[in-house]
Amino acid sequence: MPGSSSTVFQPTRLGPLALRNHVIKAATFEGMTRRQVVTDQLIDFHRRVAAGGVAMSTVAYCAVAPEGSTDGHTIVLRPSVVPGLTRLVDAIHAEGAAASAQIGHAGPVANPAATKAPALGPTRIFSPLGLRRTRAVTEDDIARITADFANGAKLAAEAGFDAVEVHLGHNYLLSAFLSPKLNTRTDRWGGSLEGRARFPRQVLLAVRDAVGDDVAVIAKLNMADGVPGGLWLDQSVPVAQLLERDGAIDAIELTGGSSLANPMYLFRGEAPIAEMAETMPAVTRAGFRLVAKRFMPSYPFEEAFFLPYARQFRRALSMPLILLGGINRLDTMERATAEGFALVAMARALLREPDLLIRMQRGEADESMCIHCNKCMPTIYSGTRCVLVPQPSG
Image: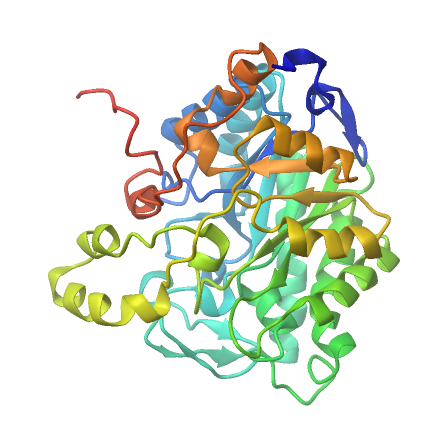
């Protein structure tokens, strides 16, 4: 096994950051912030991953406004959470890894019953998550939310984060603006590709201005929404070219799927419908089972399933790109770096084995034990974990 001689474990850079290798922990909602603040459980989660050898661990999901929370239990970036975030960052740094904060606004993905505020979208659409229509954002909303992103990024920098990852994926608010299916506005924030991209580009420029040049800025961008009429490569590649031209970001992390209409497009593999239903109140369980197969179709799992799409971006751009999507094997990571991807991002594999990277570097493993059963997905409501890893008693 290549072990420490592998190019994957050579130091690299991301904008202003020096990273110890080419692998980062992708943002995976941890389900450990019931009161919207950092907990010891969240700190331990990221400490284990950092100690396991990744170059950077990404904290998810930090909302930039209360109505931008997905379920009312995510961290909301405000001054009161900075001390807790600083403790979290210090724990990651103590293990030799960098720390990234994923910041975003859930938009139509938010559950208004939980956030106690209307879900927002580029236009009025029915949200299956909130079981009601969203409110179309106004010019004032766009100005306010842009400022919220800038303020949230500044708070993350004050807490000591080395990077901020701005969420432009999964049909969260900025992703919804990019979608030709969800954004049917006829003003300057819709219509053409440039119009639909105006709000996300404005946000990224504001974030860069807020954090300066000492913090890396990453955009997590949908390559494809995975729904008919949604964003696809013919438009997402030009969006990425616009972002590169703006010069506000240090890298693009390439993703796909819609939390509104097709979440399994991001995960691939079997949909854990029965397990998801068990997390729901009995009154909604039967209804969920009826619609779940349409909402959560299963896809055959293939390792690095986004690589064919990501290659289109690598060919069209010169800026650093981050590859994710079911990456399990060291030789796959080596192939990705050889093809010019700056970093690879792992999520489910590190839930199964937080120490995977350090064992790969020692030559003790070349592949994750993750079987991509997706039964980790329902655990987001009680603390995200691999169900095959025994939990401490008590």
